Image (cartoon, rainbow, N blue to C red; front, side, top):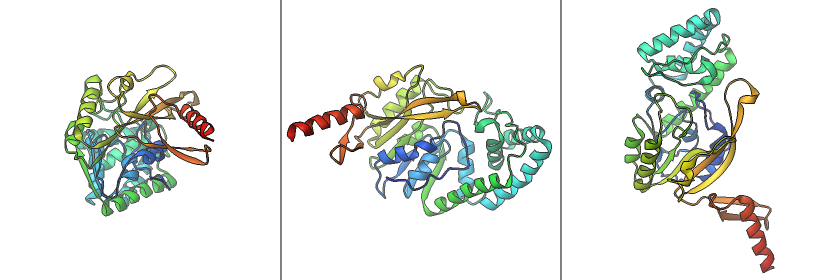
Length: 318
């Protein structure tokens, strides 16, 4: 599946998969009638770019689901959001942190999705984090001119894409657990999972431990559907041991990716991402007798080793 353009959603999250969407899209197996199921929606960037006509998007964070449902049901629209961001952005310019704190307190009291969008785009580093009482607690990003005209226009264009996509497709949004979502899957569906990375930082909507990882593994295997799991493989400090235990009989692909946490360049650390699948993806190698497709199990083969073996075979037969 080739991508001509990546549509970025209006919600920002840390660890967003925008730059990985083409890689993920190349390795999913979807027909026009396949229902896409995504139990960990996050920002929605993967599914909003890959899903076909039918999709079930779910997340345990009610605020993202509420925002997208209100857009889908036309209770919110790009015109309302534009007017809101211009008005509140002007006040943010005048009052700075005081106004940010006011909106945050109002959101924690009323949980209005348009306030959530405002906070998400004006808080520190686009984080989504909640305390033990499930109150949004990310500090102000200290950018009083955040909602300049060009930035508002960018957000509104992102919202307009969703308005069009929601009107054309049968996309369902539910706030529920990953267990409930996967249990809805049928054998002809495709399940894409991007859970909180085990062993990494999480918030209180997305706490994740070994019990959750084991349960996810069990549910995916018992679903009867094809599935793909995004996770981390290793970084310069440690590795994800679960890939060699509970996921070790699945197929795996790797790609280096950078997560830039904070404003300093030294915080831009590489991570080896992994895609885990219960089917064999086609990996294409160029410049070996022109063009070939191979089945690649990344637990036992590297691309370089597979290419070398193919070259040796070709030389022996020539």
